[in-house]
Image 1 (cartoon, rainbow, N blue to C red):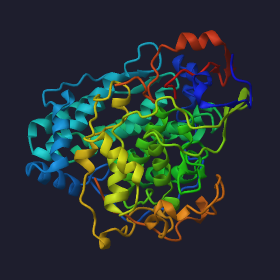
Image 2 (tube, rainbow, N blue to C red):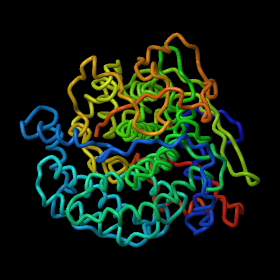
Image 3 (cartoon, one colour):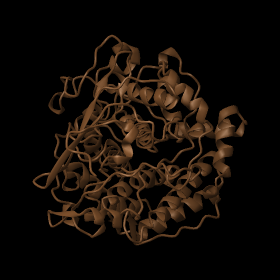
Image 4 (cartoon, rainbow, N blue to C red):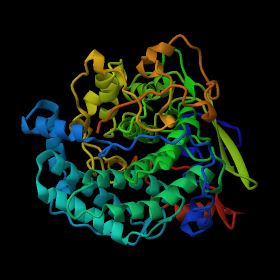
Length: 521
């Protein structure tokens, strides 16, 4: 039976928890809730002032300086870059002979689920684009161009259960990254890619951040918000749209859902660790969140926005916490209550009391960007992230870890992010070139996680900064550019089971109530 409202739930019995993957899963599967998409045009949060500076291109996960470094190191046959490139070249989706299979409608989490087709093609586009930048081989550039053009010409709809929002987030940021690499290449239709991102992906991203599919803001776990923020940020950069960049950064800092940074990492614990909430849920979702945090921060950094250092390096404290637990060490855990449901329909809550053992020690290609930023680029201590990075490298991607986990992240970070340690003079973040949404304390971005070691548990809402007071100082930045434990994967198999548990009417649709199965969002 479903856990009673307010019942304390230890994560050793996490399989019995109700999933927010979600309470509204059936609504999407039946086409219900479509009216939510595009409802309202303005974000439900204040937007910071528009920047006067332009965008860096290429400037998402990689800049031209990054590509130049990769190319030089691989050509020289140097260490980790050589190993990272060998991992990339060995992946079947890196072949220049890859042919796209575009679809007009992509479905996730419902009958006809075909999202893997899109996921593999985007992986192939990104990996071929990366190989082109490293080797100069135009055959790879042609392959990446043809994949992106085929999809942007045909895709018109993302459908399915509530999981359609996951597809819009994960594959939105991934497609935009591949397109950004191909910007300016002969024959690549950038305008067509932009149009598709703005018409198909962004409306779903924006809708989710503003109304969370008709549920309470806290109904969905933080990884849903994070993958959506990643997509909005990437689309903003691709389309030179400052308002969308501001929307993503503002939500990251001040959003009402579980993915904004002070909800995703609500407690700063003695010793300087930050409790990443989803560590109390299961490690598949926790590690997905780690990877998304790195993705968001790296893309923002390359546009002059220091989210890595925001709020006294809160992200570093959270990813260190997750790494420590997944390496087999003990971590403290402050009880946290999850409130879920939909307004006027149903609500409940569960309290997490300990770090979860489900999925502990899982492998994902997510650590190199975090390690190379904090340790190499900024000269900070990150012992657990450092240990985890060494354990996982060389990082793969594009299905190397299965069709679930292996497609949540673009991967190949050992090739892409490995860098020499910066000199002391280079460790300070340069002046911001983006909007005032880049602002945070200058001292915070240079502080080590141990700076808060003496502080007692700090809860959400203790910070004094608010959206209306940002911009006093600006930290800038610079560029850098298989298992079934997939935290973003759901598949269609749950639909019958969900229907069997009963449904309640909601906003012209249905609210599905069901028990949570392992690996669910």
